[in-house]
Every structure is written in structure tokens, then in C-alpha cells.
Image (cartoon, rainbow, N blue to C red):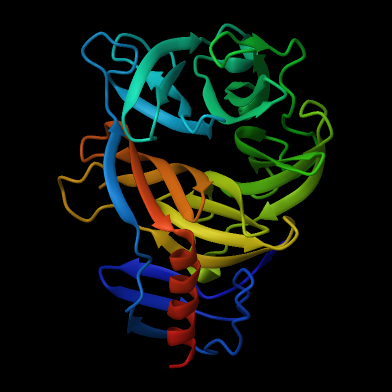
Amino acid sequence: MTKRAIFFIISGSIIVIAAIAVSLFTLNIINPCETQLTVKDPHPVPWMLGGVVLDLGGPGDFDDKSIESPTLIQLADGSYAMWYRGQTYGDKIGRLMYAVSTDGITWIKKGVVMVPTEQYEGDKIDPMTVILENSVYKMWYGGQSHGGCACYATSPDGINWTKYPENPVLKKTSGNWDNEGAGGQHKVIKSGNTYIMYYKGYGDDNPGWVYYGRAESSDGVAWAKKGKALSPDPVLGESTALRNFAAFRLDGNYCIMYAMAGNLQLYLASSKDGKSYSKHGLVFPKAKTPGGFDVKWATSPCILTAGDTLKMWYEGGDINGRVRTLYAEINKTQFLKTLKTRVEALSSR
């Protein structure tokens, strides 16, 4: 279920606001504007842009065409590991590739670590989430069969992977709202002893609409679906189809940073309980200059928190549709403060 909040549609420097009720993290914002109005936004979210951090490979490399779906963890020694889907001009196979970094900025590629071999995978493997627990790397990844499905694999080192023999672990359900596809895109977070999966799903009861569903598991393999968590809202100017996203915790809240079909830049929704979400508008626009590496889209974010810094790696599409991994960061306190100031300024008009 989605609660409507102030929603921002940015076009140049103009923002259209449709406001009903606002609940932004723990900021206690009240009395939002009650009518639709157009104003300039004096409070953009002040991200520090780092540009391309993982570039395309050379001719013949397995990632010479695109680098997609970056998925990262920070290790105990402070270094970073990244898994991503590499595409080459040589064939149509999407391979799981691996890179390491001491700072999250300068990366050393380690090559292919998994390839699609199973019917449920199709010809592409999309890494969605990796969690390191008790010296075991646990990965959930997207498969292409069943209209999109969620699969699972484990590894002792992040390089040598064993696919779960009963994959997929989550797929479409006949008679349900996601009866045509469930899990091709998904994210997993751990809350206490429970794994929570948010997944992209769609069905024939509402053709053209794509939602985020929610599922829970005690072991990361057997999942119980819990219904829709986030729905598109055309009344707020949204597309009817939600796309690639990140799910993460921030100051005790559940957050989803998401893109939409036809509007591939990043919006934010938050929740106290991980079930009922409020939307807060555009928080990371794509580039506006033709030469920008994310001028066509900024999507597929991966969010990590390091101290008081919110770090984001994301998929950027250039004017020619070539895809790389880009980086941005923001002070977490400033992120929350800026959103609060922006909403308060608009609601006081």
C-alpha cells in the first residue's frame, strides 16, 4: 500500500507538486500544501558526483558493450566488492562479472565468475543482492524465465558460485497480481532474522502496470509473498511501470530508490515498517548535458552507508545507450536535512 506524499516532477528548474500528506522519515513534517502549484525548487538534493568509476572493457572483453546492475558490499577490512552484468558485442550473453576496490572508486576487474547455463536463467544473469554471512557469500540474482524470476547462489569467496538446485526461489503465481512475472528485478535486505525481498511483478489483471511486491523468508530460499509494497500512481505524474530500484535501511527506516518506465531517474519512497510506503519525489536526476555519461538514464542504484556518508553506485546510460557504473555520495545528515527543508519550504507557500 502506498501513501501519497509531496511529489516532485522536475523539468529544468520547475517542480509541480501534488500534496496530500507527508511523512518523511522521522522529520515530523506537517501541514503540507493542499493545492497543486508550480514553483522553483531552491533546495535540490546536493549530491557530490564522482562520475564513471567502472568503465567499459576493451574490444573483445566480456563487458565491452555495457556494465549493468552493479551490486556491492563493503568487507570487514573496508574494501569493496562489486558484481555486475557484463555484455559484449560478440554475443547476447549477460555474464556475472566481478571487481574489487580499496575505496569504492578505483576498481580492479577480475573477470567472469558465473555464466547462464540453466533454462530458468535464459541468456542473462542479473546480480541483485549479495550478503556476506558467516563467511558465506549469498547472492540473489535475476533469471529470464517465467516472465522474470529470482534465483539464488552461494560462494565461499565471491568468485566460485554454486547455484541453488531448486531455483528459481521466487517466481510468478497463478491467480495472483504477479501471475505473468515476479522477481526478475529484486532486492533483499536482512531485518533481524528475516530476509525481506522487494521484487518487480506484473500480471494480466492490469496490463502495462508493474509493481514492487514484498516477500519474507527465514532462510533466503523459501519465500512467502506478502502482497504489493509500492504501486505506480499516474495521479502524481508517474508512469504505470516501476523499473530498477534499490532497497536499503536508513536511520531505522526502509527506503526504496526507484525509476519508472519513460522516466529513468531516481525517486524515493520510505516506510516505517517496510510495508506501507510514502513517496518523496525525485532525489537524483539524470544528467542534462548531451555529453553526460548518464544523460539517457540514471538507474539500478546500489546504496551503502559508511559512517555519515550515503554512497551510491548506479547505472548510467550515455547518449549512445552505452552503460557504465557511476558514483555519487552525499552526507546522510545533509540528505535528510535538505529533503526536510525542501518540503517545508514548498508546503509553506
